[in-house]
Length: 47
Image 1: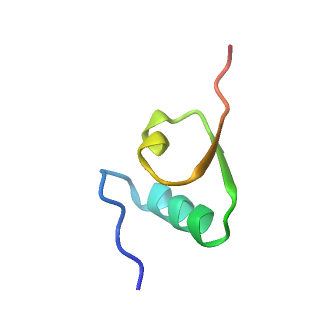
Image 2: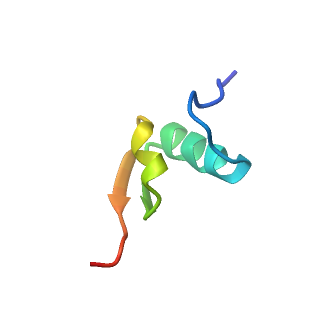
């Protein structure tokens, strides 16, 4: 059974985090809250 992420995250964010961890995928996002999790993250903010 998977544990909920320890930081505050919405339902959709928790699902994306779990998917990225289980499938060993890179998550593309401009939301800095994903930096708190042990996932591969590609920053997608405008420069």
